[in-house]
Length: 150
Image 1 (cartoon, helix red, strand yellow):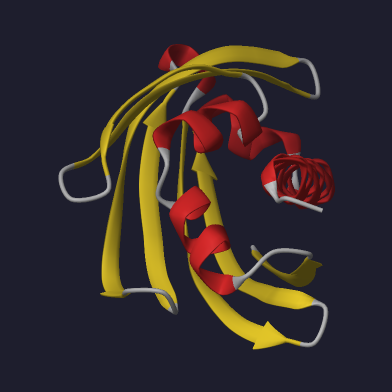
Image 2 (tube, rainbow, N blue to C red; image 1 turned 180 degrees about the horizontal axis):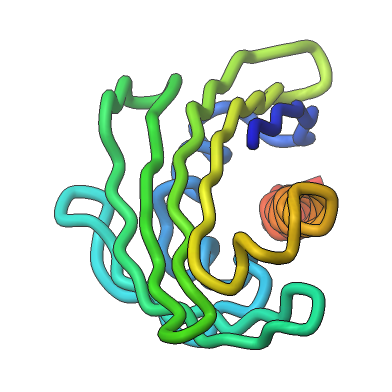
């Protein structure tokens, strides 16, 4: 499944870039994230607890940043395993552009699931993926804007 979207964040591009690479910001913004360790250079390890339809699972996974163009864009890819619930893997191309209101962040993401999760069907999985992306970027925007001086 594929998702895309954009946000205008009321902060300069350097501030947005810093937050996109900050493990504390990312942990606070990823829905259900219980643990996030690592660095942008080495990659991150995460533990995320989620309920998708009737399936609840704790996913343990790894996330890496690739194709990094500092201050402008990167590709984030990851895979999480949730035991009998199955797995989720995917990635997103994230781009930043300076606009009059601050910084426009755009993303194009792809996700795949397997195991019990795949049995839920595209409608449930697609709705869940959209909800997760929207929640992440809502939280991210609030987190960055809250730290910007007015």
